[in-house]
Amino acid sequence: MHKPNLRKIDLNLLVILEVLLEERHVTRAAEQLEMSQPAVSRALQRLRETFDDPLLVKSMHGYDLSARAEELLPALKGVLQDLGQLIGRPGFDPASSSAQVRVACLDLEGALFLPKLLETMRREARQMQLDIHSQPGDHFRLLQQGDVDFVISGLGPPQGEAQINRVALATTRVVCVMSRGHPLARQAPSLDDYVSASHGFVSMTGRGVSVMDKLLRGHGLKRDVVVRTNSFLTVPEFCAGTDLLFALPEIVAERLCRDGQLVMQPLPGELAERELKFYLYWHQRNHRDPMSQWVRRQLAGVPGPAF
Image (spheres, helix red, strand yellow):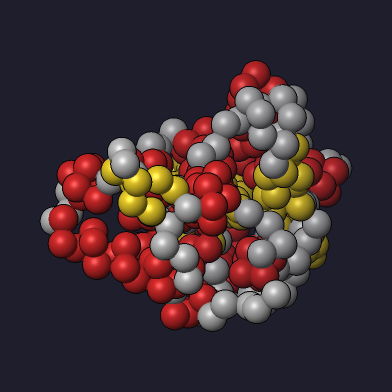
Protein backbone atom coordinates (compact mmCIF):
# COMPACT_ATOMS: atom_id res chain seq x y z
CA MET A 1 0.00 0.00 0.00
CA HIS A 2 1.32 3.43 -0.95
CA LYS A 3 2.09 5.53 2.12
CA PRO A 4 0.76 9.10 1.68
CA ASN A 5 2.85 12.14 2.51
CA LEU A 6 0.88 13.57 5.44
CA ARG A 7 2.84 16.81 5.28
CA LYS A 8 1.05 17.63 2.03
CA ILE A 9 -2.41 17.04 3.50
CA ASP A 10 -4.40 19.92 4.99
CA LEU A 11 -6.09 18.42 8.05
CA ASN A 12 -8.66 21.21 7.99
CA LEU A 13 -10.08 19.53 4.89
CA LEU A 14 -11.01 16.49 6.97
CA VAL A 15 -13.41 18.60 9.05
CA ILE A 16 -15.06 19.83 5.84
CA LEU A 17 -15.13 16.30 4.46
CA GLU A 18 -17.03 14.97 7.47
CA VAL A 19 -19.77 17.59 7.06
CA LEU A 20 -19.93 17.08 3.31
CA LEU A 21 -20.37 13.33 3.67
CA GLU A 22 -23.02 13.75 6.35
CA GLU A 23 -25.00 16.45 4.53
CA ARG A 24 -24.37 15.11 1.00
CA HIS A 25 -24.93 18.64 -0.19
CA VAL A 26 -22.41 21.42 -0.79
CA THR A 27 -24.72 24.33 0.08
CA ARG A 28 -26.01 22.77 3.32
CA ALA A 29 -22.45 21.85 4.29
CA ALA A 30 -21.34 25.44 3.69
CA GLU A 31 -24.13 26.74 5.92
CA GLN A 32 -23.20 24.37 8.74
CA LEU A 33 -19.51 25.21 8.42
CA GLU A 34 -20.28 28.95 8.14
CA MET A 35 -18.29 29.06 4.91
CA SER A 36 -19.16 30.31 1.47
CA GLN A 37 -20.48 27.79 -1.05
CA PRO A 38 -17.58 28.42 -3.49
CA ALA A 39 -15.03 27.82 -0.70
CA VAL A 40 -16.63 24.47 0.16
CA SER A 41 -16.75 23.55 -3.55
CA ARG A 42 -13.01 24.26 -3.82
CA ALA A 43 -12.39 22.19 -0.71
CA LEU A 44 -14.37 19.31 -2.23
CA GLN A 45 -12.24 19.47 -5.36
CA ARG A 46 -9.06 19.30 -3.30
CA LEU A 47 -10.47 16.37 -1.32
CA ARG A 48 -11.25 14.53 -4.54
CA GLU A 49 -7.66 15.01 -5.64
CA THR A 50 -6.32 13.92 -2.26
CA PHE A 51 -8.37 10.72 -2.15
CA ASP A 52 -8.39 10.19 -5.94
CA ASP A 53 -12.12 9.60 -5.70
CA PRO A 54 -15.28 11.63 -6.48
CA LEU A 55 -16.57 11.15 -2.90
CA LEU A 56 -19.95 12.78 -3.73
CA VAL A 57 -21.66 11.48 -6.86
CA LYS A 58 -24.63 13.19 -8.52
CA SER A 59 -27.88 11.25 -8.43
CA MET A 60 -31.58 11.80 -9.02
CA HIS A 61 -31.98 13.03 -5.45
CA GLY A 62 -28.91 15.23 -5.30
CA TYR A 63 -25.68 13.49 -4.26
CA ASP A 64 -24.83 10.00 -3.09
CA LEU A 65 -21.68 8.83 -1.37
CA SER A 66 -19.19 6.95 -3.47
CA ALA A 67 -18.16 3.49 -2.28
CA ARG A 68 -14.91 5.00 -0.98
CA ALA A 69 -16.81 7.72 0.87
CA GLU A 70 -19.05 5.10 2.52
CA GLU A 71 -15.90 3.47 3.88
CA LEU A 72 -14.33 6.78 4.88
CA LEU A 73 -17.16 8.28 6.95
CA PRO A 74 -17.05 6.04 10.08
CA ALA A 75 -13.23 6.01 10.08
CA LEU A 76 -13.19 9.78 9.60
CA LYS A 77 -15.41 10.31 12.64
CA GLY A 78 -13.04 8.23 14.77
CA VAL A 79 -9.96 10.09 13.52
CA LEU A 80 -11.47 13.51 14.20
CA GLN A 81 -12.61 12.41 17.66
CA ASP A 82 -9.10 11.19 18.47
CA LEU A 83 -7.60 14.43 17.18
CA GLY A 84 -10.00 16.41 19.36
CA GLN A 85 -8.94 14.45 22.44
CA LEU A 86 -5.28 14.83 21.50
CA ILE A 87 -5.49 18.59 21.11
CA GLY A 88 -8.13 19.31 23.74
CA ARG A 89 -7.28 20.03 27.35
CA PRO A 90 -7.17 16.75 29.32
CA GLY A 91 -9.54 16.32 32.20
CA PHE A 92 -8.91 14.85 35.63
CA ASP A 93 -11.34 12.83 37.71
CA PRO A 94 -9.83 12.08 41.15
CA ALA A 95 -12.46 9.43 41.82
CA SER A 96 -11.31 7.29 38.88
CA SER A 97 -7.63 8.28 38.75
CA SER A 98 -4.89 5.84 39.76
CA ALA A 99 -2.17 8.50 39.50
CA GLN A 100 0.84 8.48 41.80
CA VAL A 101 1.62 11.76 43.58
CA ARG A 102 5.37 11.92 44.20
CA VAL A 103 6.53 14.42 46.83
CA ALA A 104 10.06 15.10 48.05
CA CYS A 105 10.41 16.67 51.50
CA LEU A 106 12.05 16.12 54.84
CA ASP A 107 10.25 13.81 57.24
CA LEU A 108 8.65 16.40 59.49
CA GLU A 109 7.75 18.64 56.57
CA GLY A 110 5.81 15.70 55.22
CA ALA A 111 4.18 15.12 58.60
CA LEU A 112 3.14 18.78 58.74
CA PHE A 113 1.67 19.23 55.29
CA LEU A 114 0.84 15.88 53.69
CA PRO A 115 -1.80 14.42 56.06
CA LYS A 116 -4.30 16.95 54.70
CA LEU A 117 -3.64 15.71 51.18
CA LEU A 118 -3.84 12.05 52.18
CA GLU A 119 -7.11 12.63 54.01
CA THR A 120 -8.61 14.13 50.85
CA MET A 121 -7.24 11.32 48.70
CA ARG A 122 -8.79 8.67 50.94
CA ARG A 123 -12.11 10.47 50.70
CA GLU A 124 -12.18 11.57 47.04
CA ALA A 125 -9.43 9.66 45.22
CA ARG A 126 -9.10 6.23 46.80
CA GLN A 127 -7.14 4.75 43.89
CA MET A 128 -4.45 7.42 43.92
CA GLN A 129 -1.15 6.82 45.70
CA LEU A 130 1.04 9.16 47.72
CA ASP A 131 4.77 8.45 47.31
CA ILE A 132 6.93 10.43 49.75
CA HIS A 133 10.67 10.81 49.09
CA SER A 134 12.11 11.84 52.47
CA GLN A 135 15.62 10.50 52.04
CA PRO A 136 18.34 13.17 52.26
CA GLY A 137 19.64 14.67 49.06
CA ASP A 138 18.96 17.39 46.56
CA HIS A 139 15.18 17.34 46.30
CA PHE A 140 15.18 20.09 43.69
CA ARG A 141 17.37 17.96 41.44
CA LEU A 142 14.72 15.23 41.63
CA LEU A 143 12.14 17.80 40.61
CA GLN A 144 14.25 19.01 37.68
CA GLN A 145 14.77 15.44 36.50
CA GLY A 146 11.08 14.59 36.71
CA ASP A 147 11.61 11.97 39.44
CA VAL A 148 9.11 13.73 41.72
CA ASP A 149 6.09 15.93 41.05
CA PHE A 150 6.45 18.27 44.03
CA VAL A 151 8.94 19.49 46.61
CA ILE A 152 7.94 20.87 50.02
CA SER A 153 10.70 22.97 51.54
CA GLY A 154 11.62 26.14 53.35
CA LEU A 155 14.61 26.46 51.03
CA GLY A 156 14.78 27.71 47.46
CA PRO A 157 16.09 25.91 44.36
CA PRO A 158 19.83 26.40 43.83
CA GLN A 159 19.45 26.57 40.04
CA GLY A 160 16.87 26.36 37.27
CA GLU A 161 14.54 28.62 39.24
CA ALA A 162 12.92 29.96 36.06
CA GLN A 163 11.38 26.53 35.42
CA ILE A 164 10.14 26.02 38.98
CA ASN A 165 6.88 27.43 40.35
CA ARG A 166 5.91 27.74 43.98
CA VAL A 167 3.12 28.68 46.37
CA ALA A 168 3.46 29.35 50.11
CA LEU A 169 2.08 26.68 52.45
CA ALA A 170 2.91 28.31 55.79
CA THR A 171 4.69 31.31 57.28
CA THR A 172 6.68 30.95 60.48
CA ARG A 173 9.76 32.20 62.34
CA VAL A 174 12.94 30.53 63.61
CA VAL A 175 13.19 29.64 67.32
CA CYS A 176 15.58 27.77 69.61
CA VAL A 177 14.72 24.22 70.66
CA MET A 178 16.37 22.42 73.57
CA SER A 179 15.65 19.87 76.27
CA ARG A 180 13.55 21.06 79.20
CA GLY A 181 16.58 20.53 81.45
CA HIS A 182 18.83 22.82 79.40
CA PRO A 183 20.33 25.80 81.28
CA LEU A 184 18.63 28.19 78.80
CA ALA A 185 15.23 26.46 78.94
CA ARG A 186 13.77 29.10 81.29
CA GLN A 187 15.11 32.25 79.70
CA ALA A 188 15.46 33.73 76.25
CA PRO A 189 19.14 33.38 75.26
CA SER A 190 21.26 36.43 74.61
CA LEU A 191 23.58 36.51 71.63
CA ASP A 192 26.50 35.51 73.90
CA ASP A 193 24.44 32.66 75.36
CA TYR A 194 23.57 31.42 71.91
CA VAL A 195 27.10 31.53 70.51
CA SER A 196 28.53 29.90 73.65
CA ALA A 197 26.11 26.95 73.44
CA SER A 198 26.64 23.66 71.60
CA HIS A 199 24.52 23.29 68.48
CA GLY A 200 22.98 20.88 66.06
CA PHE A 201 21.22 21.65 62.79
CA VAL A 202 19.08 19.93 60.21
CA SER A 203 20.43 19.95 56.65
CA MET A 204 18.26 18.91 53.69
CA THR A 205 21.15 18.34 51.30
CA GLY A 206 23.89 17.44 53.79
CA ARG A 207 26.17 19.92 52.08
CA GLY A 208 27.19 23.54 52.46
CA VAL A 209 26.94 26.09 55.24
CA SER A 210 23.67 26.58 57.11
CA VAL A 211 21.70 29.83 56.93
CA MET A 212 22.32 30.43 60.64
CA ASP A 213 26.09 30.04 60.25
CA LYS A 214 26.05 32.54 57.38
CA LEU A 215 24.09 34.95 59.56
CA LEU A 216 26.58 34.58 62.42
CA ARG A 217 29.47 35.21 60.05
CA GLY A 218 27.86 38.54 59.23
CA HIS A 219 28.28 39.41 62.92
CA GLY A 220 31.83 38.11 62.95
CA LEU A 221 30.77 35.15 65.10
CA LYS A 222 30.92 31.37 64.92
CA ARG A 223 29.02 28.69 66.82
CA ASP A 224 30.12 25.22 67.88
CA VAL A 225 28.21 22.71 65.72
CA VAL A 226 28.27 19.24 67.25
CA VAL A 227 25.63 17.44 65.16
CA ARG A 228 24.42 17.80 61.59
CA THR A 229 21.38 15.63 60.79
CA ASN A 230 19.06 15.23 57.82
CA SER A 231 16.00 14.39 59.91
CA PHE A 232 13.85 16.65 62.05
CA LEU A 233 12.60 13.60 63.92
CA THR A 234 16.07 12.94 65.36
CA VAL A 235 16.17 16.34 67.10
CA PRO A 236 14.40 15.20 70.29
CA GLU A 237 16.80 12.27 70.64
CA PHE A 238 19.85 14.50 70.23
CA CYS A 239 18.50 17.10 72.68
CA ALA A 240 17.52 14.59 75.37
CA GLY A 241 20.11 14.60 78.16
CA THR A 242 22.46 16.99 76.32
CA ASP A 243 23.15 20.71 76.17
CA LEU A 244 22.45 20.99 72.41
CA LEU A 245 20.42 23.78 70.84
CA PHE A 246 18.67 23.56 67.47
CA ALA A 247 17.42 26.58 65.52
CA LEU A 248 14.22 25.37 63.86
CA PRO A 249 11.15 26.83 62.17
CA GLU A 250 8.54 27.44 64.85
CA ILE A 251 5.92 25.37 63.01
CA VAL A 252 8.33 22.42 63.22
CA ALA A 253 9.39 23.16 66.80
CA GLU A 254 5.78 23.20 67.99
CA ARG A 255 5.34 19.69 66.63
CA LEU A 256 8.50 18.43 68.34
CA CYS A 257 7.63 20.07 71.66
CA ARG A 258 4.16 18.55 71.98
CA ASP A 259 5.19 15.86 74.46
CA GLY A 260 6.80 18.37 76.83
CA GLN A 261 10.33 16.94 76.61
CA LEU A 262 11.56 19.89 74.55
CA VAL A 263 11.01 23.61 75.03
CA MET A 264 11.18 26.61 72.71
CA GLN A 265 12.83 29.96 73.26
CA PRO A 266 13.10 32.91 70.86
CA LEU A 267 16.33 33.58 69.03
CA PRO A 268 18.46 36.50 70.20
CA GLY A 269 17.18 39.70 68.63
CA GLU A 270 20.36 40.09 66.58
CA LEU A 271 19.65 36.77 64.84
CA ALA A 272 15.90 37.08 64.45
CA GLU A 273 15.41 37.05 60.69
CA ARG A 274 12.41 37.92 58.59
CA GLU A 275 9.60 35.44 58.47
CA LEU A 276 10.40 32.00 57.09
CA LYS A 277 8.06 30.40 54.57
CA PHE A 278 7.49 26.81 53.55
CA TYR A 279 6.68 26.41 49.88
CA LEU A 280 5.17 23.82 47.60
CA TYR A 281 7.30 23.66 44.44
CA TRP A 282 6.47 22.12 41.07
CA HIS A 283 8.12 22.19 37.65
CA GLN A 284 6.83 24.20 34.72
CA ARG A 285 6.31 20.99 32.74
CA ASN A 286 3.41 20.13 35.07
CA HIS A 287 2.06 23.64 35.53
CA ARG A 288 -1.09 23.02 33.47
CA ASP A 289 -1.45 19.34 34.24
CA PRO A 290 -4.95 18.78 35.74
CA MET A 291 -3.72 16.26 38.31
CA SER A 292 -0.99 18.64 39.45
CA GLN A 293 -3.50 21.47 39.73
CA TRP A 294 -5.83 19.29 41.80
CA VAL A 295 -3.03 18.38 44.24
CA ARG A 296 -1.99 22.01 44.54
CA ARG A 297 -5.54 22.99 45.43
CA GLN A 298 -5.66 20.37 48.17
CA LEU A 299 -2.33 21.41 49.70
CA ALA A 300 -2.48 25.18 49.27
CA GLY A 301 -6.20 25.84 48.90
CA VAL A 302 -5.62 28.09 45.89
CA PRO A 303 -7.74 27.66 42.72
CA GLY A 304 -5.93 26.34 39.66
CA PRO A 305 -5.94 29.59 37.60
CA ALA A 306 -4.08 31.40 40.39
CA PHE A 307 -1.10 29.13 39.79
